[in-house]
Length: 119
Image (cartoon, rainbow, N blue to C red; front, side, top):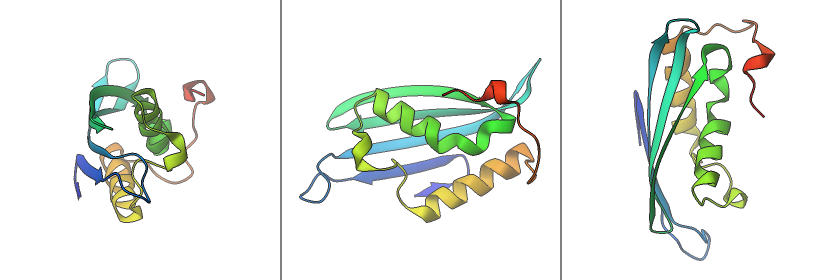
């Protein structure tokens, strides 16, 4: 379920989903004195019954890559990467992507600083 600044996702463990999870992703834009606008994300929930809470910040120019950051948080907290992306419903992803671009005033074709990419 999507609402601006928050996405809730729950998947029950069953024969098609070997891992059950419930996650809430909260995000907002914060102003850094030296870097300007930054995307702050907090993810919390349960993966196979184990509670977790984790967060990260992304530079404005690489915030479009928020799904990679969320998947890294999920994997770090016990999510099996073979399950696919943690936000599987494309409508939720698209809505979140649009909301983030709007909040950060991101325009297509803007350059990125490769030093901000974190692989």
